[in-house]
Length: 408
Image (cartoon, rainbow, N blue to C red):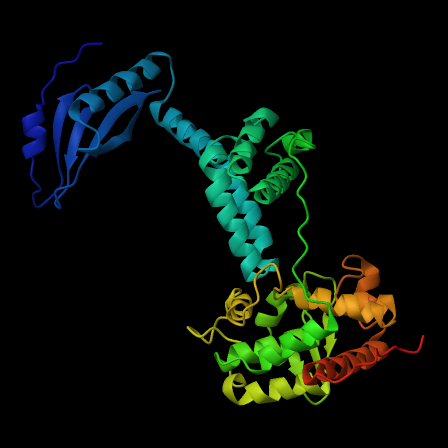
């Protein structure tokens, strides 16, 4: 279609704001609206079914004079076919929004937002980083219903190719959860991650380095006793073998969870990712460590706060870094290794296996039974934790130690 062209690029560019909005017409309903603040925008006036209507064609200079004329031509073609350009514009905008809401990234973010409040801070951070660094750049902009197994595998292979096999497995697991969420919410028909079962080589499980020889344990405990670093770190090192919780649970310990009078530390279920809280009976030696640090951090939230901010827990690398400072390599001992140390020796000493597993928070991590039995074997666990602390004390002193066996 040809139209008389009344405007020029120069006239449009030089148009300035006045006291009131005014229009510069280009013919066949197209005009430039100039506002008092100098902002300009294209408008198209048209008639359909006997009614006069107006739509916006975009701001100037983002939409040039030539582009505005193209949009006018497209709109008038729709009018010839009896289609309202305004209705067509809203439908296109809605379709685009729908498509954006159905991308892998949009659904992945929705899934993350719904689930992450139940996760620990470190797990949430790691999960978000994996999604943003390893998945969204390749899958994020695609409609989730169009992603098939071969394309998903290519994305996972990129992670595997850099030697991060464990991360690749975790990424595939996350993809499966996002796809299943999309299926549940009606935005995908199936989960293609299931087709990739066996496509990745299995991860070789790494055992956390630990010391289980009694003589070597005594040397480690004496090294901890002589630690010359920060008091917070020394107390964390001293408490770790006495309670043998996971390193993340130790560094995120809160004073509100600890009752020194009853000698109990109750870790909330949400922190443990379990159906019920985890009870840690505190030996006299563990209480002594906590009493030593209480004047320093007892008025705050965390037992072991970060040196940079009292509102954050100790860094996850602090205990391991302290062990390195004491001369222990990562192949010799880790913060997690205190758990293996306790498990090995307590089993050797004859304590009830179920009591040990319950204290390690291994047993009944899911199901209704756990909600009712989180205090299972508690009397025996109290005896065991005190006997364990006394055993470690003898090892530290270098005394000849006779293994302590519980009554069966």
